[in-house]
Length: 314
Image (cartoon, rainbow, N blue to C red; front, side, top):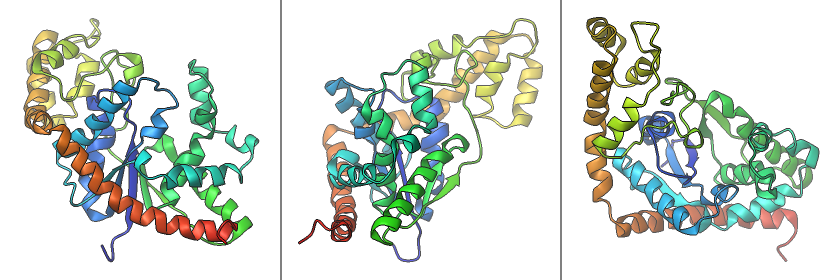
């Protein structure tokens, strides 16, 4: 795609997706991906830092692909591929591991946060930033869409590129972060950030009954007329003017407001859910096979240059 900058993003197949994933990652990608030469990676090797159930991982990988196609991403206009289908990711990550120091990696916010939350500090979790750097640099990526709290991931990629340049010469393009404006943190049913680990999610492609069950469980503040947690989710689906009128009309009627939210979520999700459910395992495999061919073509050419630069090519 001449003239277009290259964009890469990824999503871990770590469980059933929820509306926080949709507004935080899926929709922002949908809104911009055709403006770039876009690579969309299912980050299955990254998921191994915390996932040890093979059957669940297979299911989640397929669900990530279904999700992106269901929301409207055209697989012929983006390279949708699986990280594990392109072996150059782990090969380049090893080379970066040999260039950076342990104290440098110990500065990682994500590593420290996850260990503080009780996640086992395995080596994969510790060196995760260098696999992420390889993901990005392998494709001469221009921009990586990230949230404000994920800037450090791109800084790590730039550091890896600098370390390589200082040791072996100029080879990697330094990426820029594309900070996603908009919804910010999507609140869960308890008012905290929506997260599978907090068990406070509203599922994305579930049945209307399951969505209703989640919405009805949203914690409300009985001291006021407006349930703030309900409103915080509702404003993702309606503009402030409409919502102000609705919440004024239904002041104090929390059940009515939750039911209105259920209907708005269902109206938005129903067409996507229909598409999601129509996609077969063969459809998913075809998308990933096509994407792997395109991703490998770029990655293998880059790794040939890397091997030449580091001296392993005779």
